[in-house]
Image (cartoon, rainbow, N blue to C red; front, side, top):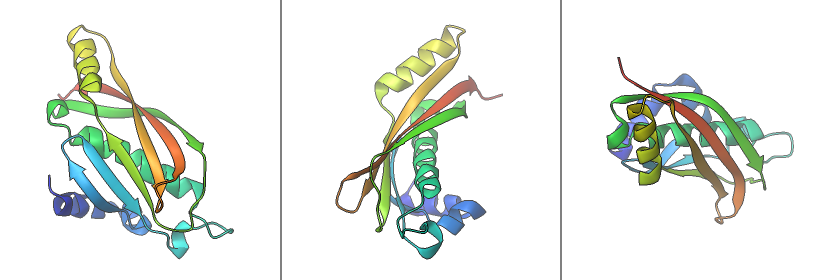
Amino acid sequence: MSRQELEKTLGRVPFLSTLGVRVEEVKPGAVVLRLPSTQGNRNFDGVIDAAAVFAVGQLAAAVALGTHPNLVDLEALQKGASIKYVGTSKKDITAHAEVTEEMVSAIRSALEGGEKGQVEMPVQVLDGHGDDVAELTALFGFRFKI
């Protein structure tokens, strides 16, 4: 999927359009999403709101999993997420997520063995200087598409 195709798809989701999420980079199983620092995304201190940071991080995890070619026959179901906020930003932030081959192998092995396939998907959220803003981990379960 190209950057333009992914942006068009994400643009159909009203919440994401409101946030203004943009696709910086996309390749199969990896994505970098940009959340602009806008009036609607900032809190009372003028920094990007924690909820907006969480939203772009969670989205990056889901997009990375959804674009991996070895997972297209599976349905990903988000089971939970945790986030550690380590900084703030008054500027745009980016969320970076990438599926490793070890993750794919673990998911497929579990499902083929009759067990629950699941993965903890790490996402790094950075400010414009490359400094950490947050570390998010999204837990996804998988099943074969019906």
